Image (tube, rainbow, N blue to C red; front, side, top):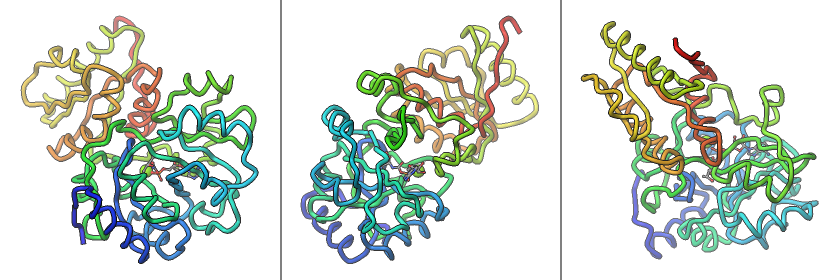
Length: 342
Ligand code: TXA
Ligand code: MG
């Protein structure tokens, strides 16, 4: 139990054996680590929910190794799927389609739709191929924790409970896949992720972003999905200067109150926060880097026992939208809007 194995061909064969026997295996994808089970083995899928302490109303994503296998889990596949998969598969785009009735209901939490994706990761693809069945896999974290971007994160959360962790190093994208609902017109992004809204709109025309009102359509998108042990304060404003000034003053106030404070900002802004005694995690120099580092930075700040995390909202463009979304959820959907000059 809790064994981490470098993802060699033998390790992948062993992992497939465990999965064939109804076991649970954590494996790398290009986004985050997934906790996989045979999608057609109800008992194994039920264990995923138990191990993660995930509510049964929150459906899982089904992972394929080949687009040809789509009809195994989905039906009434619309024409647009071919255009999307030609561009974005393998990759961080999850498509919501009509579910095949032979797929156990527990996978989709009883919904008539199934979320499907083809990951862009050699280990994941080799594993699914070796299994010969699709893998139902949520992110391999305990419910309410940041998604795991390294095998160590999986070990921290679920180590004792699962059969094996395949080590494929740190994940390339760092935030989860974009979940796109194709059962409505225009299509709706239920969760922003590794494929940007702009890229989807180039193919599809207008794409809507899920709003608070239709949240129940995306059972996993709880307002406070990731509840860190620290309180996250997320800042946004018209000018960077004003936002940084507001953050600096909050930082002073908290430090004077004797609080341990963590900071999550881009590399370029680090020098602006030179106060001693706070814990800093850099989100790097680009939105791609911010996506890659976000979850492990949150875990690192928690480990250092901070009570507050001050973060600067990234621009909501490209993958920045996904980073913003995760930060906003970490902040319990509260955004601190800084007015100019105050
Ligand atoms: O990048 C990813 O998507 C990762 C890797 C492992 O593939 N997986 C992942 O799974 O993030 P999970 O379970 O943590 O998030 C799946 C999201 C949830 O928000 C869930 O509610 C939504 O997809 N989802 C799955 N099936 C759905 C369905 N039939 N209808 C609406 N939302 C669905
Ligand atoms: Mg998750």
